[in-house]
Image 1: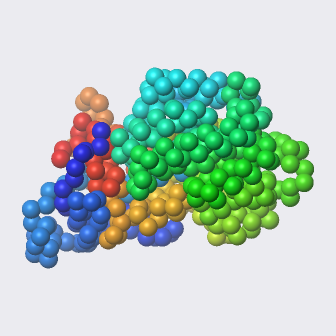
Image 2: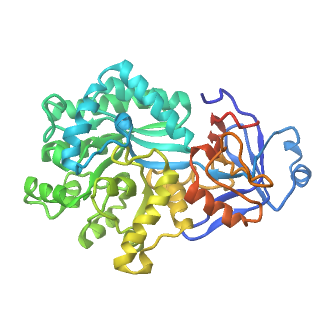
Image 3: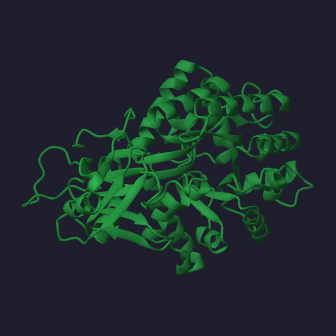
Length: 462
């Protein structure tokens, strides 16, 4: 659970964060002061606690939190696209591709979450799971059901995880047992969920609503336009899917024959805005890239899902070079893991698959993947002024990473404390790379959102 109150706290130890897409700062000796509101008030490099106390006299009584076991502080991960309602199906996608996977696995599960008790179990577990992986902000798809979508918002608010919560809209191309019965129903129920989420967190400091047309094939043109109008009325964020795989694109062309492209379908409906998150974008045309850029819409890159469902390898370098804003998404349960750290690895692998045909420029570096996981994601969800890095004025959304240490002789008795082996001679850059390529939730000892402790493991010592 999130701690009820926080005190003025000094975080002592190495820290790592992205300055820019290609510049990853690794500070081996840092001191960061966070006030009672969870806001960073100073960041000192190559400094001691004594130096900080002499410079900041009013912080002498502050609580001290130190890194542990070859550890460092890192910004909280931001998952820009995932389906909380599909969590029980994680890792279950068989041999299917996107459209058959929806019919076989997804719609039956999502429809069952009309049950408050079942939704409580699924959503509580998934929020706990994502927090354990260091995800401090998440853009969630729920289901068509208003009460259980609202329940997801309640859970995130109680646990202290930042979240954009979306009630899914679809009035066609889905089973009769699981769809909006009319455009009016889709708008009314979406508005009901928006109003509820804003009532429990009026400032949107933790949870915010997000308008969620599932994707163009599941909504009629009239429904899409009505949701575009709802966006204008409420100024809520928008999330949907685009150009995930080629059969889907062909389907969109057949359903919207007068539209110039998949992106144009959304643009015509008023759904392509600066507050829009477009998941996947594997097969955008040059004209679509230009259109998305002109509307300042954002991209959620979901490499694990795109590989699992054989959708394709998104040309992330091309999107970045075009000036698009890109973050990472786990896309559970098309994706097999709720971990954004895993998505960093997968994004790097997918970029290397692209490089085999497109040349080395397509490759993403470790620093670039970590940028997409933090600052890039913050821009995608509209929180770039609050989170994503460690600067004065930003809020303390952070995780404490522990890498452990190989003991002399190397013999291991009992359980390993994590998958990363540090022998002691590695540079800090080496250690960060080992974490990115080998780490998992066992390396995340503690997680904070707005300065509040929202997750710990048994090895965390406060």
